[in-house]
Image (tube, rainbow, N blue to C red; front, side):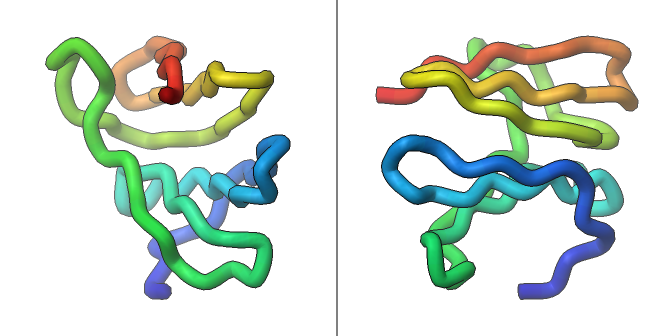
Length: 79
């Protein structure tokens, strides 16, 4: 899967596993078997590129990402 470095990881109520990869500035999304399903590299609302994604947490339909390189925390609302 080619991680630059693995940061904080969490899972949601559907079994998706979200892993922060600060070296590659993204959140990796896998299934419960850790097979790759996708990634997040941009913040919502055209707020720009992620830089230094140190952590990720989910609660229901919401996901928070620490974007340390941009000195912010971003809230994503999942459909």
